[in-house]
Length: 172
Image (tube, rainbow, N blue to C red; front, side, top):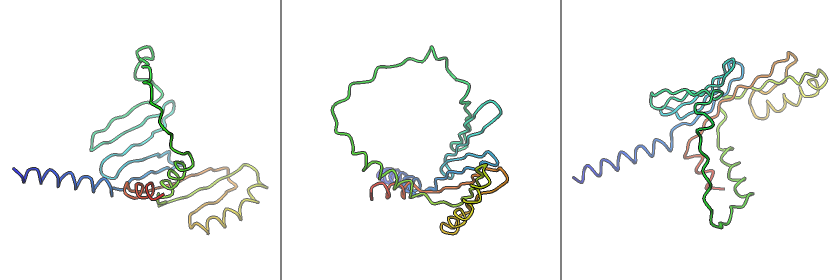
């Protein structure tokens, strides 16, 4: 009997370790209209822009579900608004401390791919910005540039783990 309990705790421990170190990703590609997010191997989501609607597709352990954000799923008249419960007087967290923690969590993301190409629409401003974008590109070792062709492009891939985000949150 004790081995069943030990096996259950071991399985829960393995699942928690996997969730802590599973790779979280966010991928944006404005050229191909790809907007993805998820946890590798478990959950993934995708925002699909079609002609007259915006779809969100979720894949959770092989189960696929799509939602249309433009077309409501329920009638507005059926939705019941409940009154909020009275809250006790609690001391709110200090805003600067919370903001610093959130910034630390965002900084913990690793930028795997970054390509930014901007055209301001003004030839003189593009000429002024060209050396600044070049210096920024060399400094951060990512491809950031401006162009004179009227194209605006963003290709971004961010990765993180839950363990790294928790470490950044509690460390600050």
